[in-house]
Image (cartoon, rainbow, N blue to C red):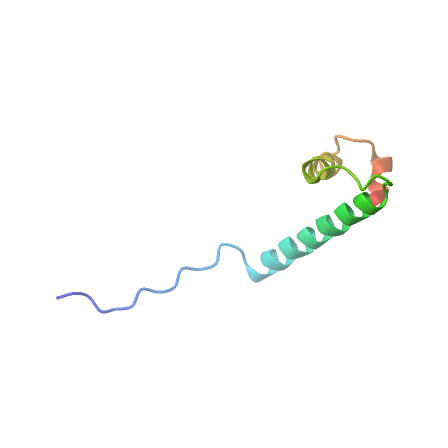
Length: 70
């Protein structure tokens, strides 16, 4: 015979608040990328370069005067 007891659903890895924080961060990243692209006459950097730039800004690797891209 097999055990017919249903297995409980596995819990989410992120709490609801962590999920909301993640969504807010993704939205902020998207808005900053859009501003970067539209702020340049040539259409902006390739996406990978834009993401790398934002990563470096976030981690303090670039001067803080570039943070006005928010």
